[in-house]
Image (cartoon, rainbow, N blue to C red):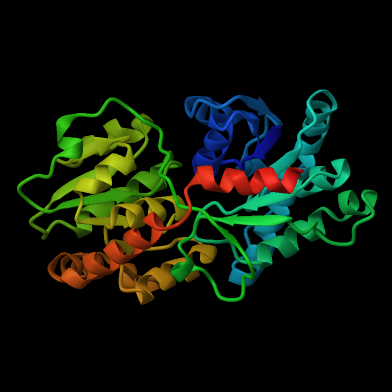
Length: 375
């Protein structure tokens, strides 16, 4: 059988779909992963065949309309969700021509799209094949779907649809205890960490003499403001008797090393976090899931409104502390980090989520469910 997977415009969206795509391939199915061109190197690094569908980057779709006009980011959180949905809708619209060329030569039996890959549903409706929606992390707010539907009104009308196509199946990698309420039936799947790898050094998988704290702002750190943000995070931990590790792209690692006597670089989180006692980060879904998979407590400072509810659910579970607004001041961050390191219950609660993840169906089991959809 032929399975077509669609990713979004960030490495995290590739890492999220790679376990199921790889499992399908190992089960003997033919797999192609369609991605924006700047993501194809991440797909290829995962060992998966890939086809580029647009040479534009996600930031362009988010902040530029279809006529090339610049779009300001709304200040209201609810408006921002709708705004984000329109951006992902523009990505879908731009991807459809290349996708239609692909399926003219290579017709899939089933299409799997990441949470906000709206082209997957449109293409599946056009072809009359099953459509599977695959979560990227801890869940996306429904307000994003509304924005995408508005942006894609013309494309939906061409297909005779008045709303976004319903998925034939939702594959959800979020542990059930951390999901938003009222989502309906989901096919559970175990989160399996996929990270950009590098040769491991012994310190990465060996615990040190002091507690180890990982600090990261994700895979998109590139600008002076990002570097300043990371330096401030590390500075807030100065009073801790701990080893600090900054996980950041190698392209900016030297600039961070110049000002801090800590380990800095692109470290595979799936290995590194098994030796950590705490991770301080921006609330990214894949980073959070990597930490939960390792049973590591988290100090969360979400900087995008849609990240706040999932972070709050982790805190309510007792596996994290989430700080918002003025509470993200350096002295509060340092105090919260010290509290987590000194309180065993945070690690115990994170460990209970790790056990929950381990009990979910493996990707290979979910492939068998997909096979039944396609017959």
